[in-house]
Length: 340
Ligand code: DAH
Image 1 (spheres, rainbow, N blue to C red):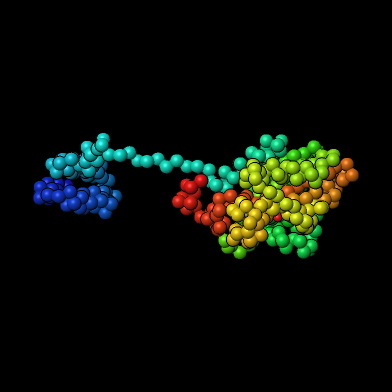
Image 2: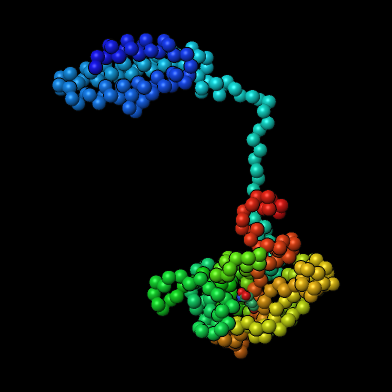
């Protein structure tokens, strides 16, 4: 191909272009990946060695010439695309609104509750979401094959070794085992965090939710200490006029155990659809730490006593804000989240 013929052809063609679209087609025809200049370049290896250098230079200068022609043509159409934007700044246009983020409602409630307990002298300790079977069950007096394990249905991880089975913790109670093994009484600790259970998802169940475990251990800790601490908690979160009741219950890690209800915050105890006409809402499980749990962590059950409790954050948030579907917390719909 003769470079001079191509050059003449370029000059003739560009004359007739009268729109930016045509100019762009022209640019692609010559400078595109499979364009005429690329074809010229690809012939270079087939030329006699002595001619390659000169021909290469000719192609390069044709390319610069072509670029300058295109630029000139662009200018003749008025401002080029880049300049069009730069010239179009409109100082009267409203600015882009910044949307300010905030803490997730579950995090807000979590912080509020942890704040209540820290003001009573509890320290906050976090544990891992992947737990050993021992800390989640055995240490808490939930023996293997015991039917009570069904209540804490669990996601097991693929075992690395048969001796140390790992799972996603089904409650924050293993925090008791970890802290008691690592420290000595007196202890007042709250353990917040995510827990996991293979539950079918519906308006009141998710496979993941949040709990706070709390416990206090020392000489002479009594059930009345548990009641006092929980009363401060319930009144701070739900209001000073709330009533509480302790119902006997069974948990393997506490003896005696109790479920704790507050008077319904919607109907104030009269009975409504939220409390199922009972006038009471269950908010947590609690009890006096079982002597067998103390034995597992190496505490002398004759010397020490303690209480423990565990509460679900989503449930408390739902009661406090009148939310009737737990799934909405994790759908990440901004219209829901921005109300908090
Ligand atoms: N771990 C229990 C659960 O997930 C809650 C609980 C009940 C914790 C009683 C406690 C307790 O410490 O004493 O359902």
